[in-house]
Length: 440
Image (tube, rainbow, N blue to C red; front, side):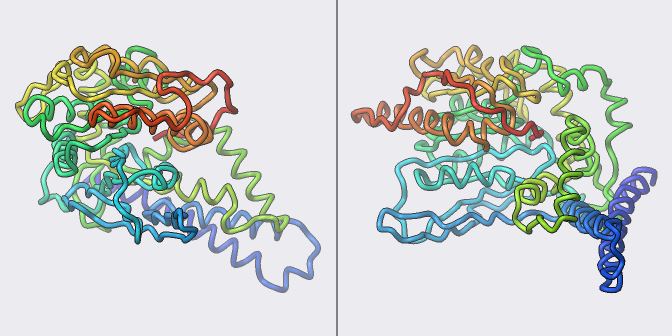
């Protein structure tokens, strides 16, 4: 009961703040106050609008809202989001571009299950759609999954990836962003050993904690400071009575959001203060940069307790992937079995979530992959968000990843190599302005 009460208490606090914001907005917006030349009423109304919107977003799953793709014929092609495989804890989605023939590149984006919805990769999807058929893993909010559906830990997550990869076939190119990078590596190794005809053609790992001990960050330090018992006692709660998953043990999205914001508290505080004053001056808009970013950032989802705890215990503390000791549902995973998959890692010099060194460790684990099928890229000046969705991704990293995919495809099909731009093994020498440092 303690867990249920705690979970519902967090929801009550969120709901109360949303109500306070709505009340302040309504009260300060009465026409009579326009006759009182005092800025307090404008500030109160602005604070209310920003507060109400912010707290309401925390329980809303964002829409994909993928814009139409411009075609070579000059027409816009509408993008439809369609489920390919539907499972209890996550679906495989396809972004179907209407009236377009299938593209040569087939890409599976493995979205993180670390507090935010897969829509956090919306801009990544949008940037890839003109050049590829894109699929994505869409993980479900644990609070909406009945207890009767059973558990979901990192071994189950790995099995989902194996199933999704197998379904999409051997011409698939996998891009795993942040948290799922170690498990995507493990899933590829399982396919390489047990069903090699269905293994993907390429595997790109972006900012993932393959070896968390390679470069310490606040995230890895937190995991090492806390015992598993302390962690379970402090952060695990039971879903309250309001949701279908009532009674399920979870790491609540609201608790995760608090930790995300605490990592860059000063930056977030300045952003909200600036937004309130902008609204008070009448300069705010529905689709301004603040709303566009925070509508996504504040939308959080619960993780199953077993997934969160097994991630901390086995990936961060036990280093099972880093030391090639991972076992998935009784099957030992030998990363050295990967031989025919081209592997690329991407890191950012200013990544404070998964610091440089953590992800590139995957290349040393892939002992069976020839050196000419490995690539690594360290993006100067890029933060965690920037390496998959910011300026660094758009201008530098995306072209390199596509070239890497094309090179592997050309080799597999024994076609002349098609070059689009920069060399796939090249590093960018001109640092870009650091992108927003948000957790994924």
